[in-house]
Length: 502
Image (cartoon, rainbow, N blue to C red; front, side, top):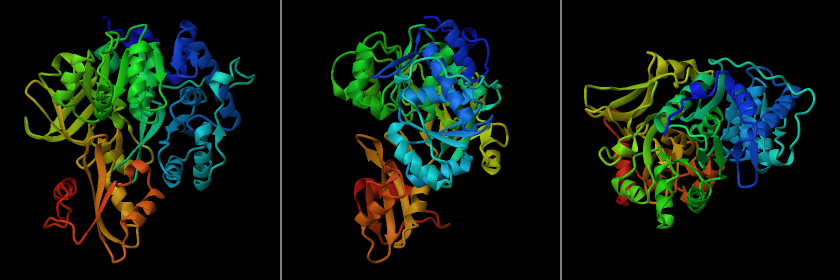
């Protein structure tokens, strides 16, 4: 297998629109984006991106304007990311699972000039735009039903530089308010290069995207594929039976999932997988030895990874050859990336990252930027250690981060909303083990007389995305505190996970 780096495949790092233009010129008939309903070649994707860029220019979008995108996994999403770049805009992908209030806050915080939506999200998008004080969203046309040349007057391709911001992706912070991580064209280019030198690039590669495209892990699949000139296959969501069928019947070569997804794939049936599957990248937590052995027995080459939004996805990756000898490790840094642990040799400490994939900062948030990048290294907030061979072991995801079904939930955000209820006096939110989702959100609350957990749940659902709402709420007399007045989350977690008294 020959590893072809993106530098050999594409002649410049000029923006998403430039990468697409090049691919449309040299591989016009090669499938670029594929869904169950339709496929767009690079020529067709290029045409649709130009058409959308023209519509955005006509709507007043100028260079560096932020453009929100509220869309599920779809062809529309694939067209939009290139159309926004071609118009010179900055993409702001929004999590379609958020509430209207959460979406409106991100639109207002990013000062988005326009919101794009496709048909399934138009009602949600209209409500969020209205609450944010914006004009009505622009409805994306179905690219599989609108073939043909770009309309007259479509905007010329914007000349994006490597250091220009391509996207702003919101990632929750421990303060409870999301932060908009700015990712440049150079960040995405470097990420694609590191991945290419790690797993290689073959002309017939087909990378399956079943993770949400509004997260950096899903978005990166679309961007890498156009840089490489390969095919991105989009599923509307994760379904273990559909993924297994695609691996066996649809010539999928690469797949990205989280550990619980891999386990559900293995539980779905007992059949082996074809040798055409070159790599299954698994992030969001360690893979158990039992799961690794089951996957290898079924011919699935699992590559455990560690990454984060602020580093444009992957930071380290474990190779298949090291999977069983370094169980639980996330591997070594990709080419062009450096990591170190902020602790004495061999001891656990904060994971620091440096390299061309690292964000230049958070949008309109100089304080958070200085705190995270003050010394040139990205302070991830994650705790890990390096063994004597240089393999990274991630011990905690941002200390108290809850990863439930691939979604990140920060306790501080949920606790802040809980404390806004008139009968809640104090709250502690933790993650407890869950067989299906890896972790489930649970809460212990100190409440005034009359607090009803069922009513509290309904109150929360009106203010938080469903995946953030605690599945267990226990009303307690007090929360365990340290002498300095901090909640002892470990004790809360043990009580809620074990069902014992608080």
